[in-house]
Length: 264
Ligand SMILES: Nc1ncnc2c1ncn2[C@@H]1O[C@H](COP(=O)(O)OP(=O)(O)OP(=O)(O)O)[C@@H](O)[C@H]1O
Ligand SMILES: [Mg+2]
Image (cartoon, rainbow, N blue to C red):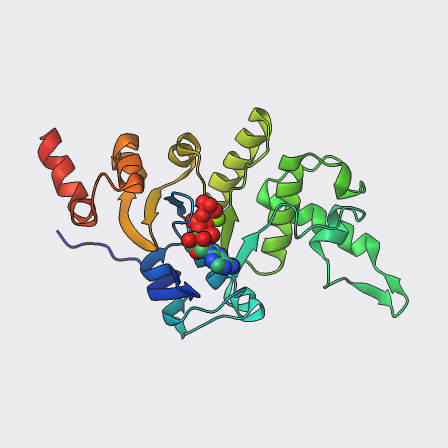
């Protein structure tokens, strides 16, 4: 049987990054596909945020390659990451609390009626259309986002990321400090975005959520990727064992064949 091969939207090859003497990333390899939710898990200090900072252009790697939609980069600037379609969705940092939803979506790229006046009507209309297209429910379009709930703010941040041209959306702990209902809504949104053809990377410490939302789980440990498993073939206990190091790198690469032997 021939194997269907899909081109990854993002490929990270042998990325290394030190902070002084600390080897935060020691040669990370990773692939992310559009239409898929990839969860990156790992203990504190495993290197997850460092990797995301490199992908969003906040810091540069010491070596390695990043390939986005077939184009090779040795490092990214925030602008080049955005132009290439990689957007990190920061629930809080990206939004201006005193502005309403559409002003936040258009932040920095507003429509002008003339040099003195914003075209609020056009922006509201387009914001409404975008939110509907993405299935994001924000009840009060004219309310300052500071008054919205955490889940609704996450929705606005997603709409902003998509409006900026994001094709691969990265979430670092997207449901941190959220209540149960809001968490459910955000996870549903993330899944639906993948179904709409966006690529999604989610970093989370919450194993239950990781298993609920992801299609694939990538485990990082001490600056390396020690395992990448399909969520529906993975056992939560094994993933935890990879995170803690109880399953070693060599075992992790044999994970699937071991599993098959065990279950056959
Ligand atoms: N600015 C920095 N200066 C020095 N060391 C750093 C810096 N940022 C991260 N590190 C170190 O790099 C390593 C990886 O950190 P990173 O923040 O990427 O981990 P993480 O997987 O995101 O952890 P967490 O789950 O706690 O968020 C850690 O040893 C950390 O102490
Ligand atoms: Mg982190």
